[in-house]
Image (cartoon, rainbow over all chains, first blue to last red; front, top):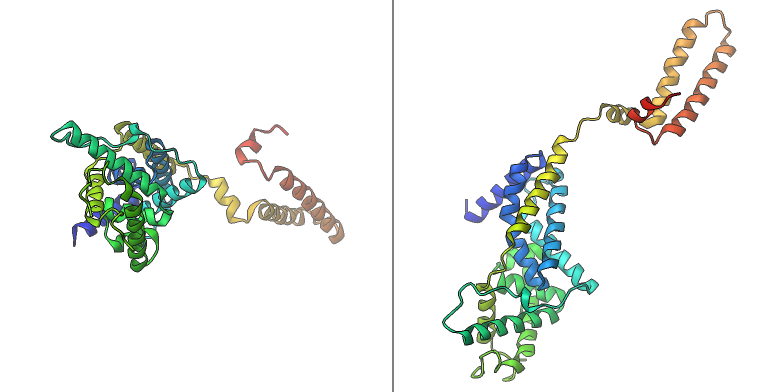
Amino acid sequence: MTKQETSAAVQADLLARAATGEARAAKDLTALLAPRAYRQAFRMLGNRAEAEDVVQDAMMRLWRAAPNWQAGGAQVSTWLYRVVANLCIDRMRRGSQASLQDDDMPEPLDPGPGQETQLIQKARLSALYAALRKLPDRQRQAVVLRHIEGLSNPEIAGIMDVTVEAVESLSARGKRALSKDLGPHKKELGFSDDR
Amino acid sequence: MMTDDDLSPDALGKLFASARAEEAPIGDDFLTRLQADAALAVAGRAREPVNLWRQIHALFGGWAGLGGLSVAGLAGFAFGISGSLGVSETLNAAAFLQNDLTLYSEQFSSLSLETLLLEDF
């Protein structure tokens, strides 16, 4: 059994136990799934408060679905990330998305060698997230899941409920749009020699 | 079609790598709150008492079913004690009882058994 299959089996077991009212299992499953769900929501919405709302909503939907969960059906994590993605898209369509504030930007893990590096790093992230927000919903979802979350195309296809070919196409179009949008800012982003 | 003005795939790859390297950590307080919500959501389900009355109610098809059952029981009782009555009087009495029960069932259909028992008729 692969690591991924083991993880899926553990999640399914926790969900089944949570469905019978075992609070410990529900807490453990939350600890397993919520951090990644939050990261996904934050990267799609660019706003901490909205990402938290989405994750809270998605987790409550998971507990409601738990009693009727079909063993052997969708993986719990895939199901949750799909719900998170759809909730994010709903929010973006409703236009309730607040603009990304500097305070919302993730802090660098490692401060790096110098202040200039940090500034460039921050400018790059701000520009990337701003450009991502201009992409059509499905392209943004595919690009975030593929190139930032690092999921495989088949995993993304499962989450987005489309074919692998559609994921590849959405991701490629998204990247092309990002390249065009960010091109004029090469210098500020430290890519002055970029060709 | 990509032009020289566009950001190159390499540069875009570096931007993605920067984003991947950044943490977007879930807040400890928020995670704790989520876990508390989770415990409440599933524990409520486990502690939900088995409502015997609701089960009986559902088993016999709701108030109408229970009304019919009561009429049948009362009619049987009426037949049992009505040796001295004629058939038409007995049927009239049963019809009267059914009308009464139908009225009651409509009136109290939205009330729980506990509420009904608290009522002082």
